[in-house]
Image 1 (cartoon, rainbow, N blue to C red):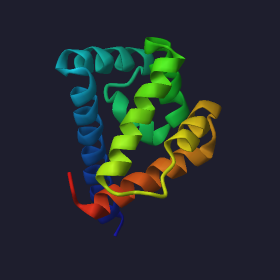
Image 2: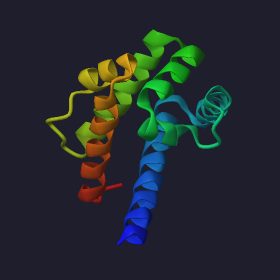
Image 3: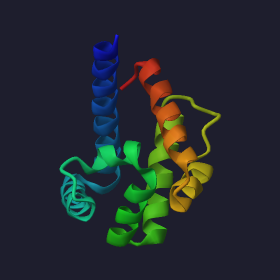
Length: 126
């Protein structure tokens, strides 16, 4: 049972990372994605920086804000989550509330993003 849960989590994280990167690529282009991923890797001291959004959303926000500024970080995250919510018809998700929780470093941000991407994965639409 535990092994199945770990496999499901790995699949879920891979889907999340792919979706997140796809949206950034669409919004900013391939070169910007590569640069952002590199800078986030350095800032977070992690080889897989986009996955840190799942494990520590506040830390991810702080790293992103230090790279592109707090206003741009907020705008980018709002666009990202708005696109995800629209694509998967998630009317109950409020990007502004989630981003505020991220900025405040609240544990609820981690819970909200987990619920969001569980719904996205259940939807099955990449």
